[in-house]
Amino acid sequence: MVFLTCFFYFSSHCLWQSHEVLYKNINLNILFFLGGIIVGFGWILSGFLKDIRLISITYGIIAGSGVGIVYGVHITVISKWFPDKRGLSMGLVISGFYLSPLITAPLARYLIDLYGPFNTFKILGSAFFILISILGFFFKYPPEDLILKTSSTQKRTLTDLSTKEMLKDSKFYGLWLCYLIGTLIGLMIIGISSPVGEELVKLDPKITAKLISFFAIFNAFGRPLFGWITDKFLPLKSAIISYVLVLIASLLMIISRGESLILYVISFSLLWLILGAWLAIAPTSTIILFGERYYSKNYGIVFTAYGFGAIIGVTISGMLRDIWGSYLYVFYLLSVLGISGIIIALLFLKNRYNKVQESN
Image (cartoon, rainbow, N blue to C red):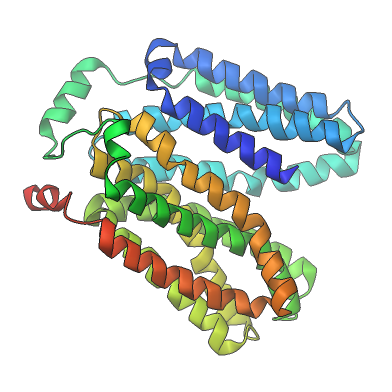
């Protein structure tokens, strides 16, 4: 079910992101309302089913598709309101998406204890439908005069590349691979945070559960932080900074053999930060490297890297544990991925935006 949810969430996001014509010609409130209906319907319908295979469809396919639609809308809109601070603004908005478990997880636990899992599906589904639909009415594109004013003040020398032209540019493949690596690292770590704490650090499961909430804060904070870093220092430097942090975190775990509580907390905080970082680096870099005109469609293609990283990341860490007998060896792989990311960034994420940096 996790696989289906990830797959259809990413598929829907890429589909709706890639068709910017829909965003321009269809009222944004209608899109949000449509997304709210689909999310709510998927959750509510899951509450009436007892078969896990059917729930995989209602929750994984239907609800996952609705989330993909809503996610795509607000990213597209926010990028147009703050053209000079896109990375920071998108990072702040996306951080809300990943801070939500701090509220929804304990709420769901409380409702399950009180009403059972199936009634909880119905309650949360109804709440999501109402909240998404209402909040969607606050979204709109900026007025045309504001768009013209802000675009005229931007010091950009890049030529806008269509999706077809972007796919012929080697920098697209460099960004795609860097995004894939960042996602793969982050989602591998999310999947093993509790097991590593219990197996290597010998922590009580209740303590690791609390630490997961603590790590989630870094995950959310990584978005505005690296959005700002990408705005300020551009894709190459922001990518290298993220991978250097991966190397530091991995080395801390390798040196300590995973037995130090302090180094475990520091290491996993940094690694959770990286997943958040790339959800801000990638969309901002897409604009910097390939221009603004075709951003929605171009980022829809770039975002497929996240989908592949999610599908691989949720399974590979467990496989490595089975093969090598310890989660410690995962950090050797993370070190290799970090070095690979630095090399790819140095080879592909430069030159095209040098003129932009000079003009700033």
